[in-house]
Length: 116
Length: 112
Image 1 (spheres, each protein chain N blue to C red):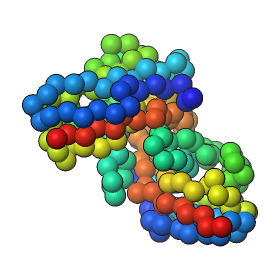
Image 2: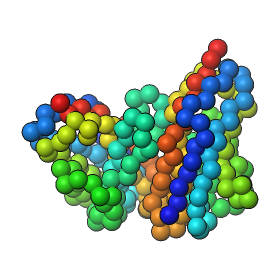
Image 3: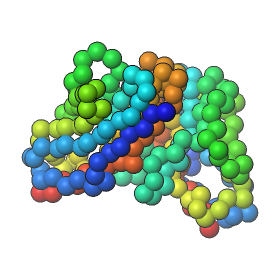
């Protein structure tokens, strides 16, 4: 139990579907992240939220839409995805962004997404 | 920008043997360095990190790493491998004002 909970753990969706991934952290952190992990690729940082404000968007396609209603919750809304978007999506949180005094990022167990 | 290079995408050791996973970093400012482990079907878990101070850092499960500025390295070691150490290991770097960047990972296989 890392204190970061992701649901669902597994999701299969068609290319025309709309679905959402949910993340909740119970650590009292102020920063939250979405990472994408694909086979044979480094972890890709997608979005960063700090105190509910998006501070980083690493050129992520608009078919991925994040939402951070408060410091404890983070969503990733998915629509019209492509098969190459199939991957493990990891949510994470930290007290502050890692560049500040080397804050540790804590990860959830991930949501496995398959686009068919 | 900061980056890390993990040498060897796969490392195989015998149970009881020394584990050495290599990580070299590139950073224009003093770095913060991390090692994470990922077991199958799980997220990433912090093993250890270096921010400032003592260059030899001890982590969980008997792992340690040494920050060597002159060699721009942060290699991960464990004196004696256990079967339960089989996992994917990621080195990562950040710095003041910069996000965390991960290496491509090293898959550790432990054989009986």
